[in-house]
Length: 203
Image 1: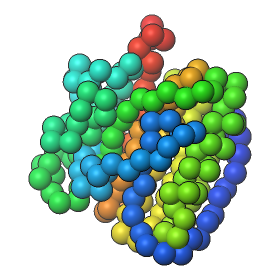
Image 2 (image 1 turned 180 degrees about the horizontal axis):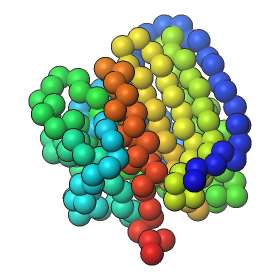
Image 3 (image 1 turned 120 degrees about the horizontal axis):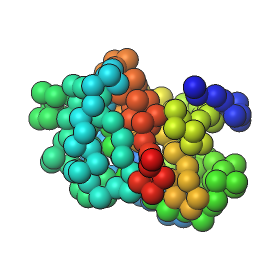
Image 4 (image 1 turned 135 degrees about the vertical axis):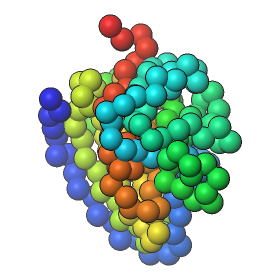
């Protein structure tokens, strides 16, 4: 059962200016980078009942996860390092709800998770400066027992949810971009995050 280890903060920043979706760079403590596919393609969610077991075989990510039924890999935007999913039938839509999954490294052990969180917050604030977006965050555990920080960015026309699943000196980022606001996308992202297991920690 999932338990909350800290209601660490509720950040509400009403920043003025342009809008946009801001994915994070591989090292949250260093440079900021942006990547287009979140804006124009890939994954979302549905009910977590049925799994697409191809998720691990299709990528070189050092972990496995369950893809909810009704969501498929977006081949056009996926790479070995970052895999995108969209609802089946929406592969060619100009701006489908999408979920990406990638793994990055950082300088923090899990015991330093609060320092990691602060680095992410600083980076998000820099990326969102002048955007008019609202940022909130929460800290809890996944169903697998991993620490996860969840950041939600609400802006005109889109909602982004970022799930940082932590391990020593690395993280898995499950990144949802929802243009429709449909609940199944949020459920799918949550299901993927909850199902993620690091390959070297699998039973």
